[in-house]
Image (cartoon, rainbow, N blue to C red):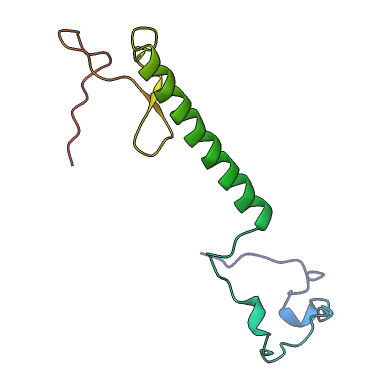
Length: 113
């Protein structure tokens, strides 16, 4: 088998023929500078506006629960629990208690681990 024939005008390309790339202007790395002690992260110190809003929201929820309890104590028939109106333990999701003799809603899903 014969080697491939190259024309005489073809010049082999090597890395020496590549154009010179300029070095990027990157600042040299400086040693770590000591920072002030006030910049430490403390998860207990929140934004004062945010903590005020959270406190207001908690107070509003407590007042709403107290108002519902007072109204329910005055007229228990008018304030029967409606499924989905009560909140779960962490006050995030309306839940409906399971009712006796009612079929379950949804599908059973088997999960294998």
